[in-house]
Image 1 (tube, helix red, strand yellow):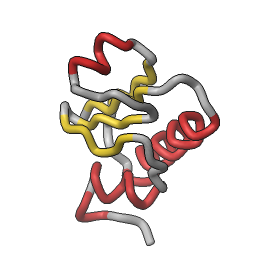
Image 2 (cartoon, one colour; image 1 turned 180 degrees about the vertical axis):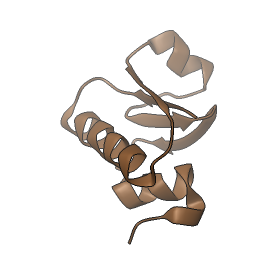
Image 3 (cartoon, rainbow, N blue to C red; image 1 turned 60 degrees about the vertical axis):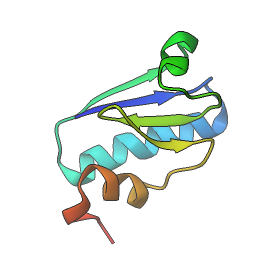
Image 4 (spheres, rainbow, N blue to C red; image 1 turned 90 degrees about the horizontal axis):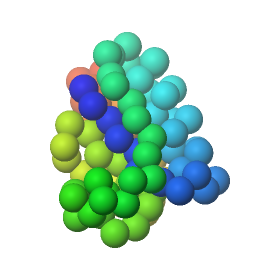
Amino acid sequence: MKIILFGTGCDLCREIAKNIETAIALCGIEADFEKTSDLSRMLGYGIKSTPSVVIDDQIVSVSSALSIEDICSVINPSDTPE
């Protein structure tokens, strides 16, 4: 699984990054997690604002917070922690 967080390093970006790392650990999955501010890559996905999260080439969030539960429900829908 490939997870990309597009962001500028703002407080919300850092919070989402921490939530993604926690969700990966809680769900026990193998994931390649990358944080980037590369504008050309972001535009390649059609993303125009940050923070944005892309999982396996699918945009799952743009300009909104993602909780650990939200992330788990996307990366491992059958095993979302409660």
